[in-house]
Length: 128
View 1: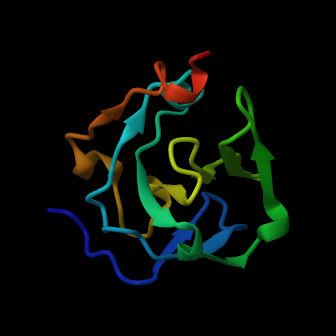
View 2 (view 1 turned 90 degrees about the vertical axis):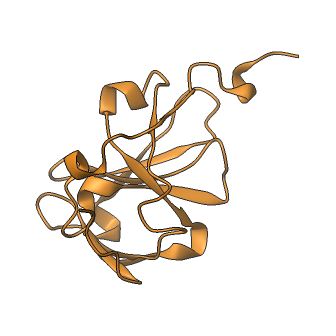
């Protein structure tokens, strides 16, 4: 049984240095994994939130940014514990992907099956 997702819902990294309030686009119904070179190594289940759907309660200065490839996606991690918290999506820069495992009370194992997004063949990687 899936946990209740409140609006907003609490999100924390592992060490607790970063805490956010997140309002998801459609609860856990947007769950997915990506198989691009970065995401398949990270392995996280992401759920969607609009750009206005994240409020950092504490630890903004403890977030670090990682970008690669097209430099469109912005991946954020806690500097202390290294946990991926969220990213601004390459597939839709008007959305965040939020690490479902960082949401209070959510165990990603309970989300199976989780669909996969084809990040290997992303349209922005193709030359015209």
